[in-house]
Length: 322
Image 1: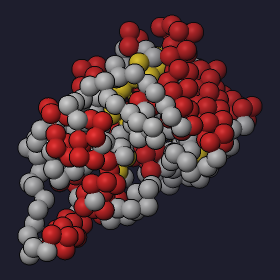
Image 2: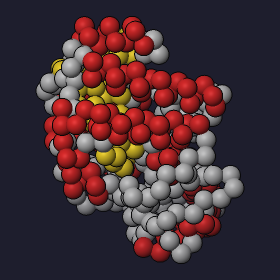
Image 3: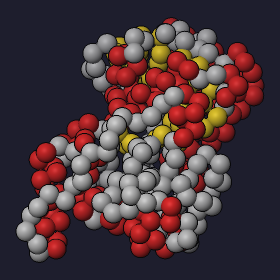
Image 4: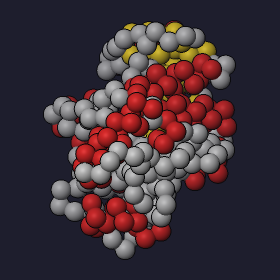
């Protein structure tokens, strides 16, 4: 299958494009830069240019479009710029795909659509969080993702069985180099997030290895059924990005979750990807305990020892059984 990946040079895009190429697809990355990935053709383009994007896609004649291109970090640009940019990118890429003959369209959304972190309070409907949870965006980034999900659903209604559409909400994306100590998109490292629970509390300790997100996309491309067209999926790790169980950690850091988090024992995550498993047979393969490099695991040990004043002994539990 010939697949266009918009944003293929980004943190998530590189892993998605690689996963699709490794699955045997003909992959074209369309972004501002060429990702330089084996088996992936790179095209540079301004996806905000409606006519040029439609012309490019018509030339490429994709069977599928995976839309990832976006301003990826809340508040990293003025609110009106984030909203207009992300909505326009998605609408242009997805409609260009349909006009060029694509019959599968998948777009990236975000868990932020449910509204956690709202400055005037947020309370979950239930934990773990599923796709049934109401959306309640409180910033332009989250609102732009709600608009993208609505666009995906609109295209499903407009085109019926001729086109299969979907949206996925990847949790906090961790690229392979970030397990080695590279800064995340927030500027701190994964070890920083583990050592200081307040850093990851704002995202309810969710995360997903970028390679697992890539495998989800490949699974959706291969297995998504018309009867599920327009649907949304959470895509996250099976465990939380935390050293302590969320049953105690979440209420301490996010008081509004008290009474909801009791079932999040051991390593349980606050977000459920059960729908992706049920519809597509996808499950994450990576967890932070096995993905964190030895050097970063040692640094985590040292940070925790310095914080407690106890001798440095490895606090990182063994990897979860497969």
